Image 1 (tube, helix red, strand yellow):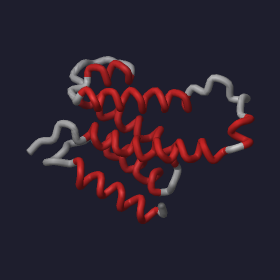
Image 2 (cartoon, rainbow, N blue to C red):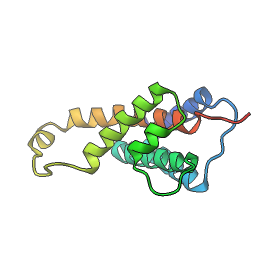
Image 3 (cartoon, one colour):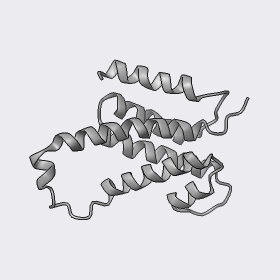
Image 4 (cartoon, rainbow, N blue to C red):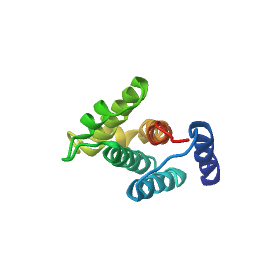
Length: 142
């Protein structure tokens, strides 16, 4: 997909998933725009990482407790459907694999054949953008 097709995909997600209105903090809106921009540019890993940051920011805004709960706890307490919680945990675990690389020098497979990793990152970027929107649109106001 080229950037224009990716922006069209983002708009299609909004059309499909937004039922009513949504209120986001300015921080969350900014981070969502950055995730969209990374996705449209084909920066798959960047889109994933920033989408998870937007999800966390949104869940923090929805959380009434003070303090700084971990993302895993925010997901567990979120008022969203259980299938969305499962997808959020899957995305969180995937993000953690990239943010907390166990052995950065174990890169022979990545060097020898980067295409499978690139394809996986692209697939997960699509998943991340959909999961982000499902999260921020989960509790619309009408």
